[in-house]
Length: 273
Image (tube, helix red, strand yellow):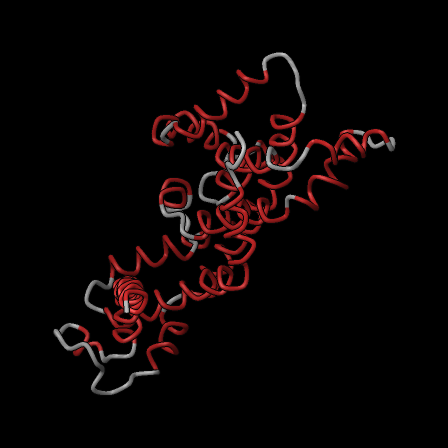
């Protein structure tokens, strides 16, 4: 009897939490299928299912261009981050050199530093390079590494036993060989977790495009474009919710297919300091 009560109690809590998390998403989907007049009422269920709202989105809003800009931003930022942050994290995790502790402390400080503190001098720098009005000021810095990604990857690399790297060195591998042939194949969950974090942050970024690309509507990604549309069409809630649903779909699909390695990467990261 006790086991049954515990089972019921656990599942009631889980069901309640699922409803709390999925309720707003369901509300967005239902609102996207309402007429514009009904969307302004307190009604929760569409009286007529307006599937045409999703076609209206593509005719009234340059959604495909927004998607293309977001994809360019997210994919390149993620790729550049991996190219720069994986070697940096490996050096901090496995290569001993004088001042490594100070370098790691600098990474921590960079991770904690609010972006607003450095926004003005960095904007001036990109303005002098004539790259404002584009997304490149948000993409190119990832070639120099991302502090959070370096920290996350370093913590994951520390969980890999040193014996594997030592065996590779005995067989004649250089440090690059150890990284490419031993560490990276064993660190796929951690690398996937870092990549997903970067992709999601780039896809959902609003502050960066507001700062650098707001003057050029041809460079708007979906996050900034959606916010601008909502500001200009504050009463078109059905169309706004339809755009929101379409914007959520790529993120949900990516997480659905990558959730196993993502959860594994987050679980194992930080096991060893």
